[in-house]
Image (cartoon, one colour):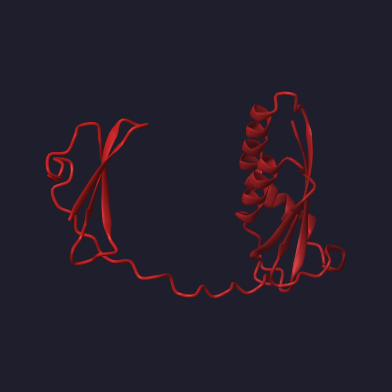
Length: 164
């Protein structure tokens, strides 16, 4: 079945082909040429439409684990933090370069990152004092990709550097 109408503002014909077998499915084509008895446009020869099931009830995500205050967690040893920072230095510098392109007045940035690790060394959370959202997002992504050895219990790595 086909129905066409002229959209006067857009000066186009809009035709809708409705499947007889699947009455809830329609295919719309907009064309500047007037349709000839709802003939199928050369752009659409045949359409196979699969009915879509309504989405299942989404299960709520469990809340993230509550982390203890940073000052209550043991700190990762400085040599481990320095090693991780050395590995991520180029990526952190890339974040600063992008932030600087976005804000040419930015000359120097003092960055403090607090990276919370689980017992296996996996990054659980990253906090920073940076206020620019794009710069902050980049720093957090880089910090989440850093590799730390397993501290054996939840710990925090305090990373501080000056980007210039």
